[in-house]
Amino acid sequence: MQAEQEADERAGDPGEESVARAAVRAALLEPGGLVRAVGSGRRRGAEAPKYQRVELRYVDLKGVRHLQVTEYDERQAHTRNAGTAAADTVVDELLGVPYGNWHIETTTETLRLRYTKKGKSLLHRQTEQHEQETSHDRTKQRMLDPAAPFLVELGISDHLGRVKPSRQSKYKQIDEFCKLLLPALEEALAAGRIETGRPLQVVDLGCGNAYLTLAAYHLLTAAGHDVRMTGIDRTPAARERNTRRVTALGWQDHLKFIDATIEAAELDAPPDVVLALHACDTATDDALARAVGWQAPLILAAPCCHHDIQKQLKNVEPPAPYALLTRYGIVRERFADVLTDSLRAAVLRQVGYRVEVVQFVDSEHTPRNLLLRAARTGAAAGPDVQAEYEALIGEWQVKPHLATLVLAPEHEAVL
Image (cartoon, rainbow, N blue to C red; front, side, top):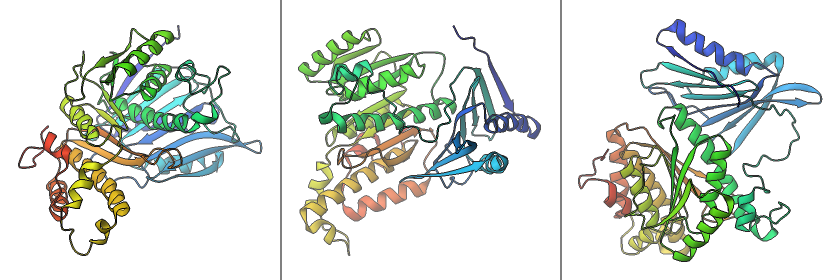
């Protein structure tokens, strides 16, 4: 078994802070050793970085090694390449950005640097081996190998490990979802929001045919996590089929399905991660409310239809001059989608979550392609967050279902 060595360096003064930063800088500037580095999150009290996340790795361009920097905003990735002579300038620039977490993999170790609420840096180092890949023309990275046994078991891939033409969209959906799940989990672990040294507890609410359930379990266990996963669903046929699949894969000891509503589901332990993929209408609100009640550190939910707010908009007088947004059925439907998810994000912010609303897959694969990604900080929302929310619901005369589930009557955060 691979030997492991762990050490924590706590920076309580500028001298110790420089030691942690120097270790990270050295790892980033090792062309033959850096495998992958990710900077994400925001340090408390600092302005939000221009880009939500940055990834670094070394690539070979025409036989010359370059540092590749990929920066992500809400819509797309921006990539630039720097020669090794300019790499130190680029790295210093990025280390000056107030990211709250750095996750770095080298050929010999993993480094995790995070900043506490008081601004202190914590550096964790663990001896691990990773393989460096520097090919610039590599095929587009996939999180899920099409030949993975669970994909064959689900009927997404054939017996030769090729994604079936008719299942390309389903494969793309779960693969892109997993691309957002793993970095979010790494950030939560690095920030100390999820306790280490014990099994990772994951629940999929309204799991249905369990495509996401099995994909998440495969992904997280392949990443080295000891996972205990539960799928919640009320459909007997789906639960029986899912249980047979899990048994065929040999996962039955750590992955189970139970018959329960989202509201009444009882788990063996509070979940670290709550997933909900395309729970219909207010079922997404029920899932989000359960996650809030559990104080889950990480929530990923891809909403489905939004009938509740649509119905409410039919019976209200829209604020001037926005009558056109509700006059036509198709426009009202799409506006209701945007309004519903914006209000969900606003409610989650009031109960101690940092929220991102992102597109997780192209609309050609599914029109329901928005993802709410929420990380629990426990920080009380400022008065401007509540005021902004109340102004919006007041103008449109709507009452989000999620608010009735998690907010007190006076709309104060319930932590």
